[in-house]
Length: 120
Length: 110
Image (cartoon, rainbow over the protein chains, first blue to last red):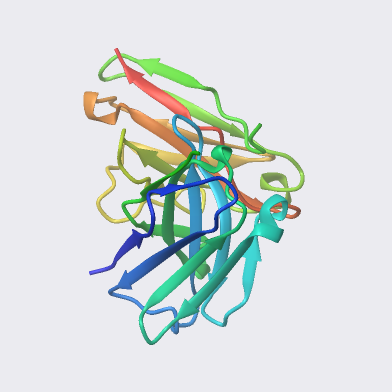
């Protein structure tokens, strides 16, 4: 059974760095044709794709946030880490990790999400 | 502003058919990239509803269907039920922006 779970801080101050961990269960990022994406959702607003890491360690980032984002994977721990620097109140939102199945280009399994608030 | 444009809201009575449009451009849907649809209830994570334009994951009722033509895609829900009240998002790939989502549509069942 596939599941994902995000973990990390719930409250940050402006300029701090966000580090979120997505722990995978039921699948591995060492498996071909699988990726892990990060998506955020500001309160009351739409989903926004942030970045994605493939099984072969190729990474893709939202162009407007590329300088602030880093995604890494630790296949031995079955974890993927998102780092976002210089957090601002506008970055407040729920962050989701989701499995990306390459053959059908779909985010087919999602974590429950974690709400991150940026406030002084 | 989302790259994929959706109506902010749609509504229908139980039993009716509703459609939600997703309008893209030549850099995403119009190039041939496939469209996925997600359903999201308040306070919960999105759930894959339709993938590859018109395919349903196991467990999704056949009341839900998708289509794509040109630079747009549509989600149709027939036999509307109260439990279908949720937010719906389209998603595709863009040559310049990578993965993109629509602005979301709130479905109200009257």
